[in-house]
Image (cartoon, rainbow over all chains, first blue to last red; front, top):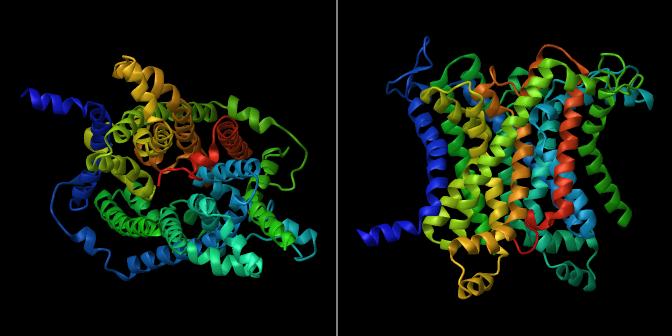
Amino acid sequence: MTTLTARLKGHRGAAYPLVMLVVFFVVPFVIMLSVSFFSRDDGAFFQPAFELSNYSRFISPFFGKVLLTSLTLSAAAAIISVSVAVPFTYFVTRMRARWQSVMLVFLLSVLSLSEVIIGFAWSTLLSKTAGIGNLFVAIGLMETSQSFTPSLGALLLGLTYLGLPYAVLVLYPALSRLDPEIPEAARMLGASPIRSFFNVVMPMMRNTITGALILVFVFTLGAYLLPQVLGRPQHWTLSVHITDQAIFQSNLPFAAAMAIFLMLVSLALVGISTLLGRART
Amino acid sequence: MLILRYAFILVVLLFLAAPLVVIFGVSVNEPKQLLFPPEGFSLRWYAELFQASDWLNALRNSVVIALGASTIAVSIALPLALYVWKKQSKMAQALFGLGVAPFLLPPVISALGFMIFWITVGFYGQIYATIISHGVFLVTLPLVTISLGLEAVDRQLIEASRTMGANDKTVFRTVIFPLARPYMISGFAFVFVLSLNEYIIAYMVAGFTAETLPIKIFNSLRYGYTPVMASVAVFFVLTAIVVFGSIARFGDLPRLLGAERARR
């Protein structure tokens, strides 16, 4: 008895965080998982049941297309963001400490911005009266200003904007720890800066870059607002449909099934990127 | 070569700054229209944020939620980080993983989980449901910053204070806490800014009763345009710059973000 209390005493500090995380994070997921098998109820939110219909509903051309749209858009945004972020982060890590801090403050500020604000800002930037259309008219590229949103291009631009600062901050630790003497050595041996970057830095960072690609992919997969603001209804992603089903169609069981599905996909991807991160060292 | 490098950096920065510049431009428009370049110069849309009762109410909700959530997140993260730092066992690692998990998944998933949870326990639509949800969802940030801070604590310092007769409490109060404090503050600040900007959880947990600024902006976006939206957006950008700028000024931001001796 005394040994048990003594043993528990050492773990006392963990009790409160454990309770909080279990009650407010694990329990909600368990409830959501069970609701995904419930049936929909018009009067209340859901009705206890056990049915697989919420999952079988995925297997339709409509949701197949939604899933394909989500995956393609996120993959494109992830590839663009990471391709820009790799050289950009590399340059940032080579800056003086003071400038690095300035850059990081700016990137964090952009990253922390609400998707609502990013959506609003881009829809303004691409609008007819306040957008780059005016700039194109001013420099004579266009006759009259026009709106560039909603469109697939606008949505992709918005998703890239969402993913870019995230990609930079994911790449930053590994790139800042890269020994500067390594690319320097390549330069000494006669490689051009571009060659030393592509033949020396890039291969060393291969796992990091793959990991970053996956994390940015999952991050943009979670975008729920930009598709509504910058895209057309056919560009709605899985995340948008989850919100839509939960709030506007009041079909929580179906929303829950989609969320569980999205979670499994994300978890698998994050798992892979963690493994790649381990292999890095 | 150097010119190319700077040109590239400049283009990326321009891309990141462009929407912010436009937002600032439209926020100082004289007429109630979406125009850029702005017509005239007026700060009245900023005044409206603090005067119009509906915007002020949303601002108040947002700040209350952000402060409450930051407090909860730090209160969970501090003992958890201490526990992981002391034990370094499998169990402690698992707990750490649990604390990091909310942040890695797309937020829509957690948002729906929270919504269903609060419906089940009967607090759906309450502001404190949003506060707790944000606090738990964003716990990752102070957990990571405080763990980084503890990593820098020299264990010999603790040995020394013990040999001099300090008990657990005294060691915590006089050695660990002062060293971890700056990291607690940055963790708090990170949660504050992100909670202020968070939309989907706040919307799904209590979007119709406890309207926050992002929810209010999105609702306004649907029903037409008002320059107050732009001024709120500028307010958010400035808050973030001030908060992260202070962390960079008084703390070690590159290290917090994983440069050099960070957690592996």
